[in-house]
Structures are given as structure tokens and as C-alpha cells.
Length: 122
Image (tube, rainbow, N blue to C red; front, side, top):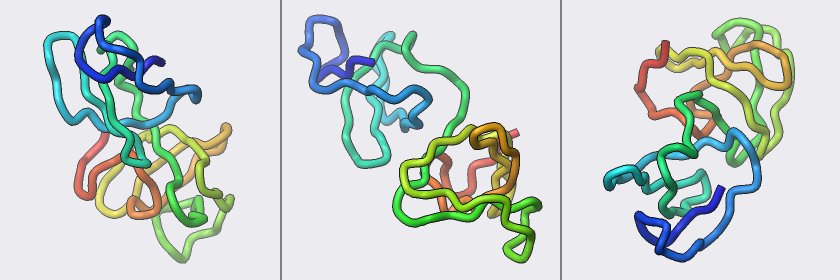
């Protein structure tokens, strides 16, 4: 996905997203263009048709645990290393139900990038 310096095809491509399903935050809108920011703070403009409403996350800094149920004491199904991507199914409170490489489980909201601190996702 080409990320441009401004909201239009006439603006030069600044950088290119190469990984599919990478979570981004929309920080501005102009007509059919969206200014996005990624988990590392890089930003730029993309056409809205290149974005999807499917929610994803990335493990940003430290290893995170994927739990069987939404509790720190629950069985750990997997350890997720930095830069692992996954799909967000739902979020409530401090926990999100996610899917990573075909495995469903729960991760603490604070251990991932791709959802706001108190944002509900159904």
C-alpha cells in the first residue's frame, strides 16, 4: 500500500506498507483520503479504498501472553513475540479476544497496539 505525503494521487509516495493486515490509526480525513499512523509513529496519506474495517493488532515492544480466558492467572496458550500480528475479535475492560495464526485466545489490552485504552469492540 502506497503511503503518500499528502491527500491525493499527485503527492509523491513517501513509503510503502509491505505487510498485510497491519493495524493503523486514522488521524485525519480529507475527502476520500485518510492520514494514518502506524505503531512506530510513521504517518502519511492513503486512499480510503485501501483500508478495511477489520481490526488487527501488533505486539509492539515486549513478549505478550495469549491466554485461554480473560484472566492473568488463566492458562497461557502462546507467547507472542514483538511484531506478531493478529485479528481483534472483541474487547471489553482490560482484555481483548483475538485470533493469531488460527488460535483464539485473550490478551491484555495494554500488551498490544491497535486498540485504544477504553475502546469497546464488539
